[in-house]
Amino acid sequence: MKISQTFSQNISFRLFILVIATGFITAVCAPQENVNPADLVVLNGHILTVDDHFSEAQAVAIRDGIFVAVGGNSDVEPYIGAGTRVIDADGHTIVPGLFESHNHFTSAVRRELRTGRPFQQLGSIAEIQKYLREQTEQTPEGEWILLPRVDVTRIAEGRIPNSAELDEAAPNHPAVFNWQYADRQIQILNSAALEAAGITANTPVPEGGSIPIGDDGHPTGRLENSGELVNRFLQRETFTEEEYRDGLVRMMNNYHKVGITSIHDAGTNDSDYRTLYSMKENGRLSARVTLTMRMRGLDGTVQGTEEAIRGFNLEYGEGDDRLKVGPLKFRLDGGILYGTAFMREPFGDRALEFYGLDDAEYRGTPFYTPEEVENIIATGHRMGWQMSSHVTGDAGVDRILDAIEAVNARFDEPVQRYKVIHGYFAHEDTAERVARLGAGIDTQPAWYYLDGDALLEPLGEDRVARFMGLQTWLDGGAKVTINSDHMQGFDPNTSLNPYNPFLTMYVAVARRTTGGQVIGPENRVSRENALRMMTIDAAWFDYDENKRGSIEVGKLGDLAILTDNLMSVDEEAIKDILSIVTIVDGDIVYECEDNRLTMQ
Ligand SMILES: [Zn+2]
Image (cartoon, rainbow, N blue to C red; front, side, top):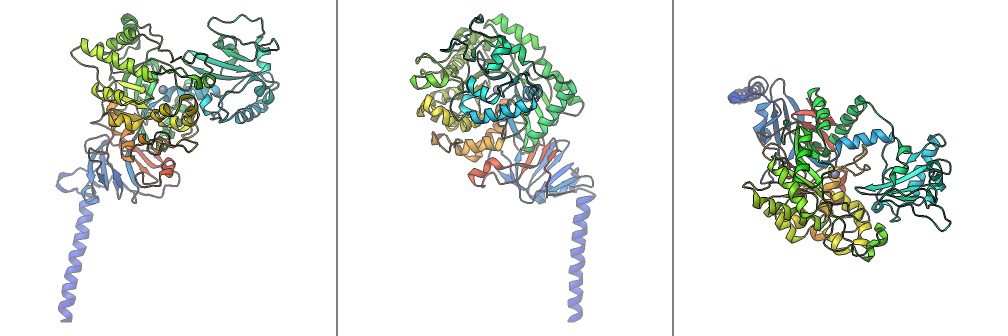
């Protein structure tokens, strides 16, 4: 008995060894059934594939930049070959590479280089003064200091600083606070700046501008649309082409730290395309980039629009999966932080002081008539371009949708996937119309987070409840992508505007302002939908939903392994999630410093 038992144990043991050996050989040397080994395999993940069923998976394999297997560990292990890099995700959540579907990647870097000082989001007049004091210590006396842009909604006191407050912090340096958007500019000069620029009560007022005079008979320090009097003193630092390209690389690396793999620069031209194209050729473009061509100075005619488009010397869709030309863009109205959005209802009494307006019936000013909007959209459409517009107010969105309908009546092919950029006030009727016209909304939850509290008093609760009304858009069937409109700075949370995608998703889900208020709780969306808006639905706007935005076989191999479980982490902690490893095209483009994952 003893002998046979030993014998049988021995056989089992040998079989066991054989299985192990076979498995090992199969995995390392010769993939089963003609499976070519992958370049990269990730095992033991909690993968949110963001496919149609929002399926979860455990492992993926990427070969030549494409997902070739998605499933359980056992489905993917056969793709491990001698040269395959294997990451053990140790149960961490993995998402498709995130989209920053509307930012100002190129100009954010240029602005930062030009100011020569890292951007800081200043939140109160005390902080503005503190910043100014620090700058006076580092700046030779007499040299001008330009404060970083701060929108009034982001200043605790709900107003911009006055000249005396700048004097307190900078008695001997000319200092300027600049608050500018589109066609409205307000500058606050301290006494030293007024003196250095030679501005007195007798200075001729530039056309369309104003230089208010105080009770003492002297200028108050406030200039409206009179920038020409001081701009020449605000000459900024220059930078070299090399510094610019290094800055773009640094910016992309910072995007990768928070899981971003695709970016859509919403305000570029042919020169930006050439710069990025040459970086791509040199292997320095680690993110996928789509460019929106901004048409400047349009006169609203067919001919003027044609000329603007031809001036780019590019075709819609030109490029490849790394860099491509996206839609055209024009601006229909101003902004809601400036009281210049084109609204259905007047801004009203409560908004007068806040925005510095003098007419309670004011509804903002559209830059183009209905006929001009139709001219612009029809021309771009006829010339084969996807179209988009900056349009913040609800009446502005109506005007765009009216024009799309008018254009559709004239052409066999309807306008498709029109990008309604900002579209800040969601109404049920607009949502249905956007869906019916196959258009979509490109909007920025972090603005609700930062500006919602300040806008509540001037705009009223009903309007703020509709501000970034994400669920209203979804209920109407409209496609939505959420993003940051990042404009300056390198930091994900303190830039203008914060581009941390987990902050964006947190606000979409929790709809809590910085002050802790939930205004319009009916507009909260699920975590699943928030993630869709930053992945697959963002890809839709680039006509790339069959290529990117989800982890499915055949799609581009972009993903991020996260520090926390996006689906179950405490709601407040969503905004603190980071990427451990970010992958573009199967290449690791970012790995956090204290990465403890096993990577072979
Ligand atoms: Zn923008």
